[in-house]
Image (tube, rainbow, N blue to C red):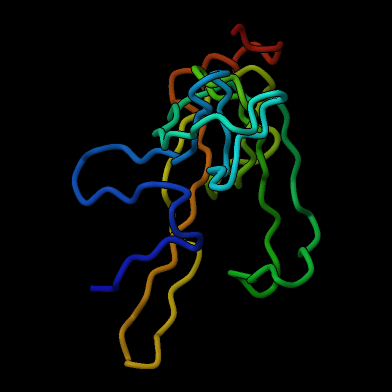
Length: 165
């Protein structure tokens, strides 16, 4: 079995059990402003640079704010996972509670025709690639991705009008 590692340490959880994953962010204790990726130096909220930051697990769900697809292979440092390049979707999702927009790739098998602004999306952890390290250990590199919530996707697909929030 491969060792599981996040591509970026400290940005999302990788549960070992049935616990759903979550993004790890920070919150300014005085202004209440949320940040992702986590802010480690100081609060970027105007007028609150000296405020404390607390680490928080952010919402797993949000509404699709915008989306596009990557028809062309991005330049380095992008790591291609298929040869030749297969287009994939990128989603900007506004988190339910924090009201911040977080971008991420959409799970394989979901194309732009399956997405609609306003539909509910949920966070998942997926494999970017698998490599073998210098010690010969297989390493599965993990990233967060967005996936349409099943019942929402079916509803939006049936009427092709903006999904309700």
